[in-house]
Image 1 (cartoon, rainbow, N blue to C red):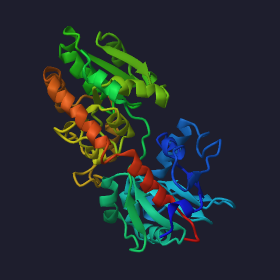
Image 2: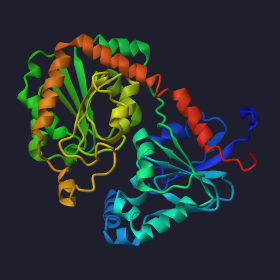
Image 3: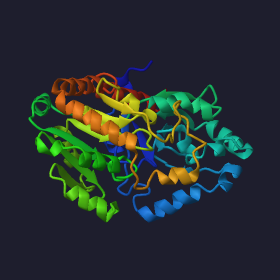
Image 4: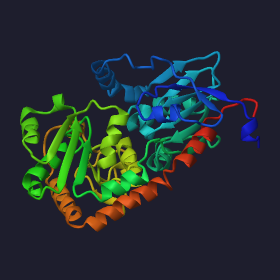
Length: 391
């Protein structure tokens, strides 16, 4: 084994890693790793409308039969390797493939991995000598990847959580748990899909605003809301409504004062909002969807509700029986009564039991300092991305 201090620094180019959470890792002090970030990241200049069209094209059933999925062609004369997010590469350099979910590789179409042509194409991609390892961003991904693919035993599969740099100070944490007002935080650009309608209904049906001890900060895309929804939110005295335009640093100010993060999503994989909130000592009310229970532990640092409609099965495989029409319906403005009931009961409980709420928040801090400790996550990424042909 080579001493880390004697290893050369390797240059890694990220590919298809456009989501904001990668920035924390790319700008961190990762031992022996230098990330080469271009000023114009791939896909940065593609409009949201174009991305939507590309996504819809990727969902055509003919591609399932043909076993077609995206492989990104990229080459470099100076980089030591690549980091690719959710996409195979066609490249002249070694690369590490990072996944949020196994079926992201086949555009969330598991039948594409099962067809004769799909199996043949995937086998070719997995035995590519430039593919050095696979890193799963959560345990749900790590545990389910063998259920979708026949991966060569020689190809190493690891599980490493995303690196989230920012966290609350002890002083600010003590300040917020001793606040006379309990602050609930909701953050999502997809209001109806992520339980915003149910939260609004719960706020309207309860009389939490009368005691002035409970306040809601709701951050969402205001232009995506129906007029009736917008008017209702603006008419609530214990709700502050914000447009989804904040920078990461600006969002941290909301995490810093929040006691409860609310995330009643109908469909998700591993929402980084929850991990960011964990680092700031928030408790949680969330649906038990995919890898969310790796962050939210029921009756430890919050409460979980089984989703009324399962996009993911209980074993974290995709629910293939969920029809496309029903799947698309998840995005619509409708209210699930069981979610409203859950929110009403749990928020009232935490409002009346401040000691329990404080303990849940302290447990989030404990979890952030163990399972999600920054030091061990950075070390794991350093080892996973080190691609030196000489060692």
